[in-house]
Image (cartoon, rainbow, N blue to C red; front, side, top):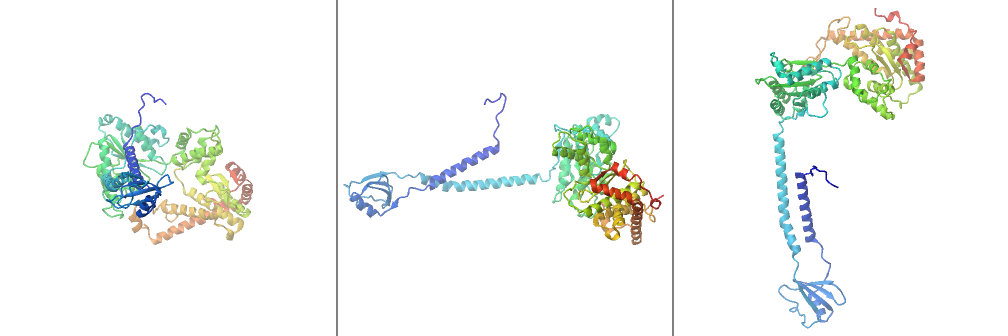
Length: 620
């Protein structure tokens, strides 16, 4: 095959040369061993006197003398079959062989090649083995020395020169965060424009938000937009078991960034190293605190006029050290919240952009259903939709695929293989129907989206409520309706089967109801006796949790317990009143669920069209 013009032949590297030398040495010693220890022909040993006697009698045709060894070929044989030894310094004639015998006497020089190779192997092999051992030990020591020398070096990765860059155009939503980050990019690209009016470059920007909201993706977009070196590292990569290593890595990281300024340093999950000092964890000489101290010095020390910006991301800003959060270190804090409906639709369009969709797929309707989800959740829904379509060998993604993927991500996969008895199915239908009925009747509850008795995840059935619009605030009446809705399943079992026949199916509902009631009293000030009082304890302060578990007295704790109990009892009474007055509608929904297993929102509304709101269940 003709080599293309201009093409370069591959150049052997050092590893190839080492492998070739090793193979040559291995073949050499194998040849030596084969030459030195190959087995000779097996000849019968006989006494020299017997050889002399038979030779004088003419019974031996040839005697070959090789040194002191005799090889004997008897008459009628083609090659030697026997051997013997003579005394050194004498001849066979001295031993009594007649000179006029018919036996042919041949003298050959001994072959010393085997001895030579054996001597070479014996003398050279130990030298080679010892030399190889010393070489290996020196290489190992050198490798450990290099590792020790690089132990305190930063492990930051340099980005910004990739072919497929992420830019702000690739990220939907988070408009305010992108605006703040675009200012940083502009400052790095056109510093004189800002310096001419006396503006200085911000030292740091902290990205704060729930998991999955796109903090790291925004940082990658900064790397794609700004044509400057971008060093990325995780907060956990600073901390090692040896004190001082983290601080050394911080110094090395900032040293690299300063040499390449203007540049950007991105520290992901900075709470791993930036936690509040003096929390009682590790003492004053804790490695993490030493690392944090070095970060504080590097970000705002004596050195001025260095164009290095620090971006950091965390979802636990409450545990960070106050000295790290002050202006001059992190000048800006960007809160990245969960996307609203318009942002969710834009995010879905980005993730579905390269996926073939059917025309009936309504991303706006999907965005309306996905209130409270993050960008990562929406990306997962898009990916699961494509997986479902491929599973059924479809070339395009249908509305059914998207709905199936959304429900799988939101409430778990269906477990149709789980076997339930007829009584369990009926009880599950009443239980889920109780949730749906109470939620439909109470005015401040969310709309019923779907009711199913097909087990999903760890639940035996699901009643799914979706708010008609995104909400930033919730009132007391809304929370009370939600509490009654949560207890609707247990109360339905009690009304239909009796209080002694209730099941464990409501265990998760009761847990969530208790958590919501305690949240209302303790954190939102929505109790009757403790109205406008909150007793929240910061989760991130270790010593505060240990030394002051509660910031209130035992008497107040008793009042809180009574308030929680009152809210749960009130919710149970309201749910019971709704179910008792609307038992026929509950029975109709149960019948449909047993037939179809799943009932959509439109059919639920049709079944509940003649429900009544009891006066005793009203709050106003």
